Amino acid sequence: MFVFPGTGHLYLKKYIPGLLLALCAATATYVIVSNAVEMALEVVEQIQNGSVPLDVGTITELASQQSSAADGSTNIAVIVLFLCWITGILDSYRVGYMLEKVDGVVNENET
Image (cartoon, rainbow, N blue to C red; front, top):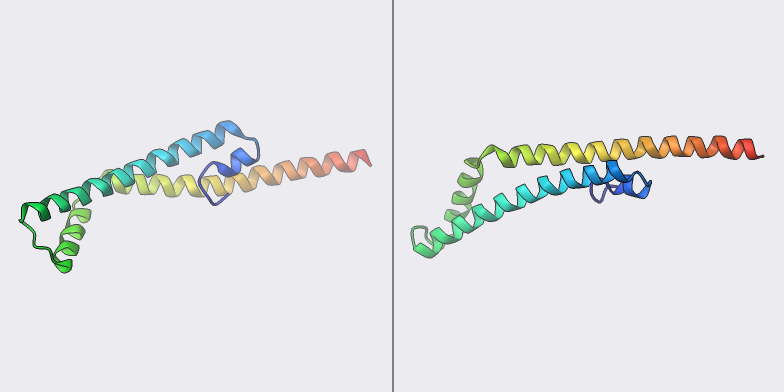
């Protein structure tokens, strides 16, 4: 259930909410990773051009400057991913509890 948002719902056979959560989380993950790769490629390009020396401290400073100057889409994607994760965990627990409660009532009626 903690693996990826939506997996708990898929396990509980709640396919539509599971797929919606998984799609939302996958989109947010794609935005985060693509922005990180884009920033890394910019740093590599500057190193290859010679405008940035091949020094760990300089590269670290440049990377932190670019990450702080990044557009807000990464921050929004992180928030969306976090909300999908929390929603997936809490709602999977809720659905599982309800299914367990229904199974308990059915089993009591059979005896």
